[in-house]
Image (cartoon, rainbow, N blue to C red; front, side, top):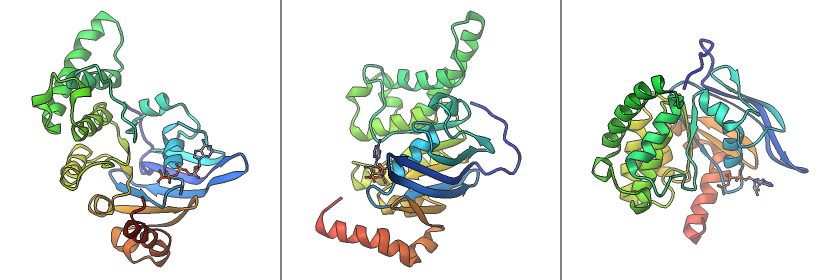
Length: 263
Ligand SMILES: Nc1ncnc2c1ncn2[C@@H]1O[C@H](COP(=O)(O)OP(=O)(O)OP(=O)(O)O)[C@@H](O)[C@H]1O
């Protein structure tokens, strides 16, 4: 993955981004700038527009209005694979693994794809060698070396999520979008996985949608709060904790939801 950046441009910039479905406005003029290497958690109540925002950034949907720029280059409205080629990778809430391939093969496919693998003999050997080395390195860093030849379908849920993280970063993207990375994990798995995310995305720009506040507050450099399609706050974890509108629109609502057992 490549793509030279105009120097000084933010890693990711949203300018007055809007999305409508029919007459319903889902995102209303979101403006946000993320620095290179910054970890930004996007939080908000259910239906606030977080996944829609991710879809607009990664190319799954076209904006109704506004701009998305990555390292100064316009990416809003481009196709997902083009955006991926420019250096943005995304993980999904729903599992995206090849279940009948081994852990090694899953990672290697992703590493090969990212090196622009083509069926040209003279390129094939060098690319394959580089991809193999990167795959072995990732296996060790993910703690999955002992599961190298296990089919992805036979991994535990937490191992599958780790493999998915590996697949997402295998191509060396500069910007990594993670969508609810710790959803469905136990507390200890969540703690372990948060460390893994930190380690594997070191130096990369990391916008993350996350519901688990312990993950948000331990991982994020800054937190963006969406409510009803609007960005109501963007700041450091301390700022966000103290923000009255956030407490009312999100954290308070969530406390109430937790007390009542709702999601
Ligand atoms: N393709 C679509 N057509 C019409 N409405 C949609 C579509 N996709 C999403 N929406 C609506 O847009 C709103 C925002 O949805 P979105 O999934 O972005 O919210 P979210 O913040 O990610 O929620 P959650 O935390 O529950 O995942 C919701 O009201 C949803 O029903």
